[in-house]
Picture 1 (cartoon, rainbow, N blue to C red):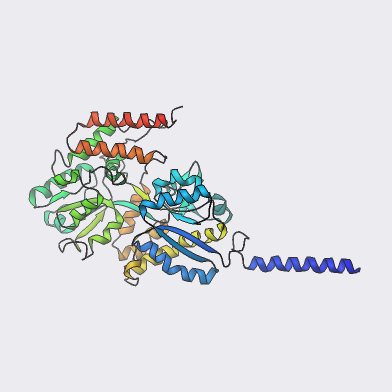
Picture 2: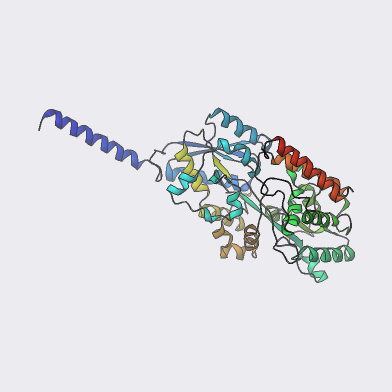
Length: 445
């Protein structure tokens, strides 16, 4: 063998050995080395137990994978601006970003589609209810994972219901009947809705539950507003009647945002509250609720229209990967770790068993397998079974860049109707404003 051939074979052997060694330090899915990489995760600032639990557990993840995770917080009101600025610059300041689902239509152009990653690693998206996955999907592509989600549920004072011999209402008609009895026979208002405008369109969530369960829609297939249809008029009037006709809601609910209404409930002034499930922990917190409320709150599915399927809401705070990320393989590994069913379940189990520090407590479960976990439901008296049922029948708000402006129009209309404006003219005017807005945006060209 010639000296040249020997040298060439040694060179090839060294190259193969180098590739083999590099492969040992690579992520199990991509081939790109992830060891020593730092993944920067942008979160909304605030004492969010689930986020804090991710931070605390990231040290163990780093020890196992060699991937470092740096969590960066920004005030919620700056979140969209931060993501947009980094997205336009393709700067790679953030690898993963948490965001409210309604921001998705505005920022998905800056996010890396995750379909290739998911298909390559046989990552099962059916672990989440369809409504949650839908909030992360745009034009058939997956742009984030719904690792934080909230189901809408009905909460009620079980001591009041037991005293009056009442059952949790399953329909809006039953809610009206129960509400009248509570208001007539106690010194409480029956229910604390929130009709106030603004607040990110919070007053739309109960309204849409009435609308959807009556078979109504916000838009038709051509994005024409149809919330002022016969079904929409009937649903809206019924929603407002809690305040206007039946008078089972407090007069102050005209200006209530969600926080105002739940504070009213926590102060022991109302017997029913409909809203996001995460508030349940507040109802049993002696620092948050009055003594007559603590230990006296039970839960049930959101009611529906008589003879029709109940439809609740879901809101998500998913985690997406920035297109400008320089560490996509490592970022995907972090995403998979955060979305791991065991990680999610352990965080909540530690909370329920009081093993987690106070700032790391979370009740958020997003995945079907965990929602139906027997031990989890035994510890919570079936709380997650009810949440799972609500998530499976949940609908979602429209996904469009113009939605914040659309929701402002409808939110304002609901507030006006709550203060006395007739329903049909107010809804018709709102529909005209929405149609004009979308026409100018090019939806009907």
